[in-house]
Image 1 (cartoon, rainbow, N blue to C red):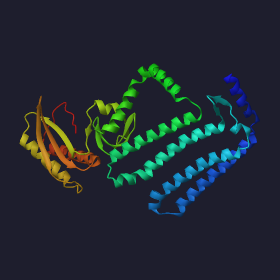
Image 2: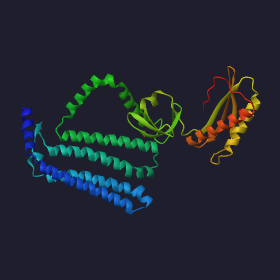
Image 3: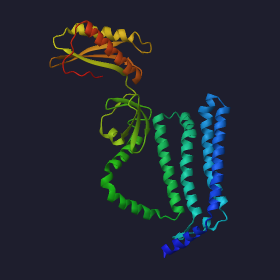
Length: 351
């Protein structure tokens, strides 16, 4: 019975005019071209850097909104006299489903998505500034607000087109039991993401060290966290890693350029320490941007046929750290060569 009703409803589509659809898409293409030319002229006519960084993105977003929703409204009015737009092609639990009703449901979801992003991008930063909310907490609030609004929008759109949310929940529960064993990691990462957002062991903007790579957290999503490093590019780390592994938070700690070197057992330790001190001092005297030019040289350990030394100098960022470590290594290599100091065999330098 319902299948026959569906086929009868779809029968209206046989009366569609391809020429009308072609003309509609031509008009829509003209609107898109006008928008593109208008934005291009705006960028050319207003050379102000402040305008391009602050005002132009807002104008671009507004124009995209106008084109999207204007195009949808234009579609509705353009075909308003067509029977297939408003006639029901399916009925469920007293709700008559039509093309117009589906368009309304899609509008609800897309509008909720765009209005939430605009709110968190342009309005909420001023609120956070007034109440002195830090960047980590503001990011958490933005994500929770987005998920809440989208959940409500989806629920409203589903009920608009006659879907029973209770029955839908039962379906998802059955599917969840069936595929649960295959998505254990996804579920674990999802739960870990919620824990990170609420417990906030680390926040957006903080520096962390992952497997010896230091980077800044740029996004905390429900399944993974995005970390931007200086040279290794973007790291996408599953949230479960932050819950189960030891992760160093470098934001509150001082950052040091650190060079370790091992020399042969029997070397003059006082002489080695002085050579390391002189090499590091020679290097940092050529760099003006160091916060402090204090050098710490330590005799850190004995190993089989090796003596381990460490040189530390405080730096301000990761780029300076890597640059200074390389320069210090060059200076140490030159000093050891001139003083006939031999490195321990089978030793790998690390920092």
